[in-house]
Length: 429
Ligand SMILES: Cc1cc2nc3c(=O)[nH]c(=O)nc-3n(C[C@H](O)[C@H](O)[C@H](O)COP(=O)(O)OP(=O)(O)OC[C@H]3O[C@@H](n4cnc5c(N)ncnc54)[C@H](O)[C@@H]3O)c2cc1C
Image (cartoon, rainbow, N blue to C red; front, side, top):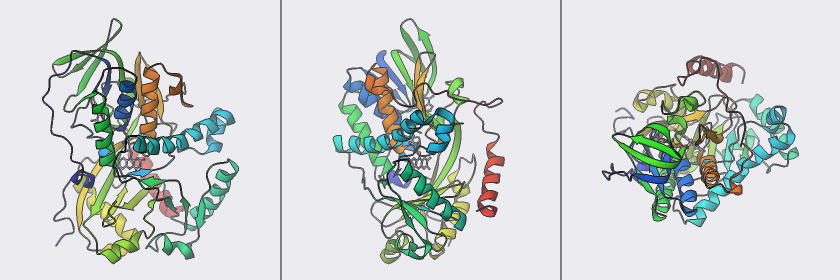
């Protein structure tokens, strides 16, 4: 029987924290702040703005939380992609260090937010194992650890291949590196917890409300959703990888990239315990990265990667993703898959998140595939900026949000780039 026979096309996480049914309530005529997008960014900003005394309305075109925030891998890291040297070459050392520090601030902020609101989301500081897919990459990790140490960033522990079985039940990798501060959450429980907090502060959150226009209107904006219009003093666009024609300016600046995940059916206890013995989050060094972890109850493997480019049907890319999983864990051959799903992350041309104001409208997005902690952090900062509070300042304020000629939101360059990166992973190590 096919391992996919019982598989459903839905995030595994929604078994524990289902999305709410569409809400038929009428929209209020006015709000101090309207937020477009009900993921972590939108809710974190809403919580902050509501605490600051604003009336807040959050709208989503799908069910509440339908974007990445209930369908990610739940890996929490410091997440700023470019290393210090690259940022220094672009922005000078002082700003480069401040940008790198924002990643660690985001990681601490996410934990503080979860603790402050007592959000039950299975947060555990498991550490993350970065697995080297080639001997060359393992050598690179040693240099990387040294550079990070010289830069004063938290230490990383190298694990040579002959000790790797304590980290991974796989022969596929050539050693790796442990970042002990990183960890994991149950992403949909985290989202549900934030929604509860936002609503307890008086925020109105509605799904199935696509915002189709934001028109300047006197001192504020007329926000159009379906046949309704809301008068808003301020607006935040928090649509990340789902940014569409609502703002062509933003659409030209974020690159939506599909990421695909599967959850296995519960595994035999001994097999489950042997895959990632210390229960860490795992990513590998490939240019076309794969990432995996155990479910919070330790029974299933949750495995993700770029199994297709812009494919919207996760069942079609599932055989390829399954094959990718078997390359790491051949002992899972024949294992049943219970869930398969995908989502769209937002890359940017400089690989940094962006927060700012365009035509009077605040935006906050572009986490480049690692946005759990960043979206909570920059969402909170966006809320503070909207309130006009000095603590909302970030190292990324004022950075140019780049686009490229001929780019209008459809990443025509993605297929050849990914094909090249895949080949490079195979041939160059
Ligand atoms: C498969 C997958 C795995 C991932 N794994 C990890 C991981 O392990 N660790 C990590 O750090 N990050 C991970 N990420 C990325 C992370 O999930 C995101 O960066 C983060 O959730 C972004 O949150 P957000 O609120 O900005 O956007 P989203 O949660 O995507 O929310 C944007 C929302 O905007 C709504 N929207 C769009 N247009 C409109 C409109 N016109 N009107 C109303 N609403 C609109 C969408 O419906 C959507 O709900 C992963 C992403 C995916 C897809």
